[in-house]
Each structure stands twice: as structure tokens, then as C-alpha cells.
Length: 115
Length: 117
Image (cartoon, rainbow over all chains, first blue to last red; front, side, top):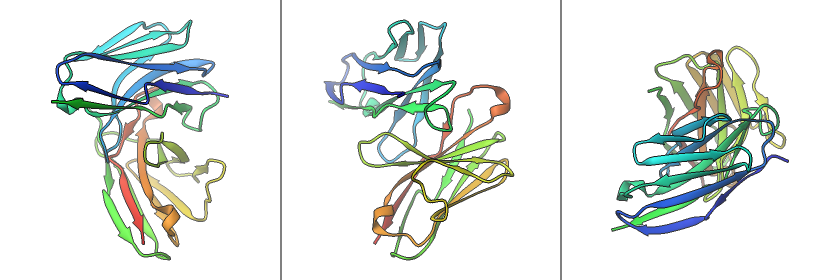
């Protein structure tokens, strides 16, 4: 069964600090992995998309890494800001399995940035 | 970037009434639209896949007669929750994709908070 596990479930850090969110998946065969940011009461917004051959991808202060061998990904946030407070969702796309959208969603990491 | 507009952003209705939610792709043609449901602190759950000009495909356990989906054009899909009940209260999100371009980031709407009283 395709699964995406994210950790930690929630995280509180001080403004300006860095943090790393983890994503482990069992989706096979693998197509791509996406990180989304979801503000409370809003739809998810795409941060990064990585295919099998990509190890890292950055989007401003967000840097995602992918190890397709160990089926792990991380999202590193540098110099956190209050606006980074949100849920971060790891989504894995496979050529089979998942829903009809081919996606398996993680439950997300709820990040709170404190001033 | 691609924009998906979802309307309304929130709605409160009485039990037994129907509610229609619209999902529009504003600057690209969406060959495929997806409808999700999200409970607090849970991941998005795919309800159905909507392909332009054809019937929607529903995930297991989703009542197609209760959640009516119409995708009449390449820029608009609608979800109608019929005879709503309090247990239908949830956050509904649509997403849109142009599958003619291979894999591409799903563009999500901002969601609709439905409260059934």
C-alpha cells in the first residue's frame, strides 16, 4: 500500500531559526515528490517538485532534498519568518496506486513560528 | 503562475439543502480537475476526478448521487453537495491540471468551508 509519512507532526520554533521537516514514502513506482505549503483555511501552494534524478531543489528560503534510494525527502526552511507558520504537506506521485490523481498525500507537519 | 479560483470560500446552509461549489482555472485549460475533502489536521482525501466533457470518476466510498460533479468546460468544474447533512461539514478543495503537458504541479483552489446546521 502506498504511504507517505511525515514527521514531526507539529513543530514550534522561534522566528529566525532554521528547521527541517521529514517525509518518508513507500510509493512505487515513483514519479515525483512535491512539497506544498497550506495556510490555515486555504488551499495548498506548491513549493517544489522533484523527479527521481533530482537530489535537491530550492525555492527561496525553502530547500527540498530527495533520496530516491532510501525513499526519503526533507524540506529545510532557513531563517524562518512568522509567515512560514502553516502546514507543510509532502505529496508523492506514482505511476500506479494512490488515487485517480496518482498522488499519495502525507498528513502534513504543522509548523508554528513564534516571535 | 497558474491560478485556480474556488467559490464560495465559505458557506453555511441548513440540513437538507443543496450547495454548489465552483472551481475555475483562470489562466490555463484544465483537462482534469480533482475534488478533495479535508478534515481538521488530516490530509486531503480525493473524492472524485473530473474530466472535461465526461462523467466524473468517484473514489470508493464517495456517493456520486450526493456529490454531483459537472465539468462542462476546460475552465470550470462544479461540485454540488445535495441534501446536505451536518456530517458533510468539511473543507472542500479543488485542484486543476493540464494533463496535455505531462506531469505538472497541481494547482489548488483556496477551498470552501462548508458548515451544515
